[in-house]
Image (tube, rainbow, N blue to C red; front, top):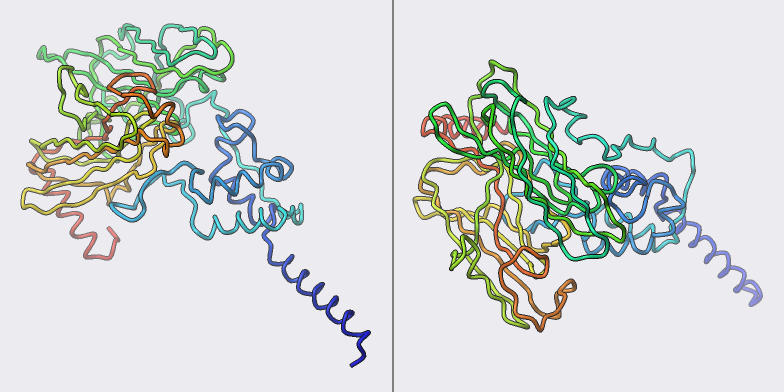
Length: 439
């Protein structure tokens, strides 16, 4: 072979290899946009809480490197569950598959090509935050309540607003709630309300006092839609107690009013199961405070704390939502059954204080626990320099409401059962399992 032909053949072979490689690189329109539209666009849109919009190729191309880094480390989409232990069937799982992550990484490494513009899927219809998310599924709420106004200062520390408002004349008889949703006002209230609660303190016809949540909010948490044939009973009068935790942005948000929406069952409908909604279970021993008084984190330390709760009646857990602050690393819930058997229900191993995600079990996977079950809650904090959001590992940290203080509890969607209801649900699950998952 002529020596002059060798460079030409090598050049042609290199070009052919490059052409094949280019064909193997995913494109935005055909491969990446479907992933972003399904899993990212709800937040990453012009009116979303994400720091940038990712709806167009031009926007996504600009942030290709950052997108790749966030999905490779599984920081985005936010789903902090340990996928190696516990129940893995969730209604609201937004995590990406290994294949989806590989697609995005290959696209970014290959120069983030656009591809054929005609292959771009239709842009998703996205809520802008002015409406409640559950409206798309349930229609308009039956009633809406608002907190009194509060002005959130700019560039300040955490702020709280805890007003009390009346609950009179909204319903005229006891009613069962189907769903609730709490959010900040649109648009800027959505950016500053980190998490919050509104509970109805009420008295029933027998004079018994109780309270029920008609809205619990957290960044990344949706509304609470109770399982089928399950409702929460509320009375027609009482008072609303608001507990709103605001995290300021770089501008003043004047007269912010948190808003809670409630969807009711029809007037004469009595659901088979009565829930108490999301309830707090602590992983501490109380100390000199009503709860969490024994949280003490030395400087440069990793600390683990456990708490136990014994169920005095059967229960169905529909969701769990860990809550710690900036030193929080992990939290798990384990069931210890009356016969001694232990089961890990769920574990968050990459907790982020910036997100308050409720992990909603698929109905057939939701923990169904007998009377006498012990719930073991384990919390891990990281007060070292290895924690990337630790404001100062040299500090002692104790319980407190600020993000730089600490907490240690988990919110669980709880439906307590009678013994007869527990037996019936257990038998139903056994039949479904024997039938291969078909009811």
